[in-house]
Length: 378
Image (cartoon, rainbow, N blue to C red; front, side):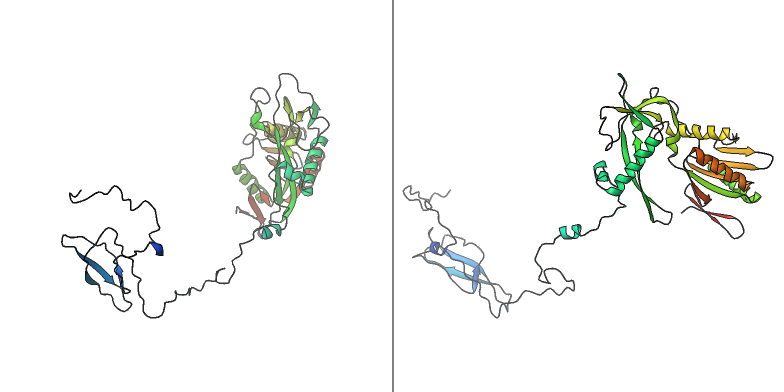
């Protein structure tokens, strides 16, 4: 702090706050420096001789030089105010550059309204092939509700369960609906499929299931049988069992909750399963035991190399049968015996006769001109 400073405790120059940028706050009755062509950029330094030197940048539209001007003031006090000088411009005002980019935007086209997405969403047509994610959505769609009814009636007709009161100390397993849009090999829509599936992860080993292993035919055996059929010039036929797992008979006692959306009369009862249902841990094994028992009664025997390959030898014919869950290949020396076998199986199970082999385990089979087979896995 300088020793020449004097304090006047009766004077408060900043008692009333004013806007330093308003026109009224500009200095009145004071000396000021004004130059319309100059702009002050630096503060005024004080020296002992009361000389003020101000470096001033002169701005011209046609020059870029900087001049320094000495301004001498006889008295510079605390109430001296220097107003900023306006910047003088010469010539006409420059226009902002126009956007020459070739892209046409909404602003260029004069469109300032917000985009409307609801109109596009409401105009979209309903796609019946989209699979519903909840039972509530499926029940609201006639085509999916019909698929659920077909599945429910098929289970009742098959005698899959009956409604009982849950015994004390027993637990139930849950169930759910699974929806699938079926398509043909060429990609065209075929039908809507709804399947009731048990929640097998609720089952407990030793209580409501025991063994779960189910054999399937090996790919090597499939190639061997196809080579043998080509060498012997046998016909190769294919059938598919509808709802194969539903034919398996259970040896364990399993209680399941009622499926959602149907029986509203006996809500407090549960389903006691008599036959297997998709999702049960023992369902594949129960179906294979049912099918293999039926084939053994018809004179077939499983081979030692693969228990999913069944053979029936008679004095007049040889029939081979390959099983992969619900897909079955039949070949043999007698076309009449093969047709008789298909009719017999049709009386015991609901099946589809797919005719000559054309698609098996994701492999497309096509017949060549030289009586061969072309296998393609795309």
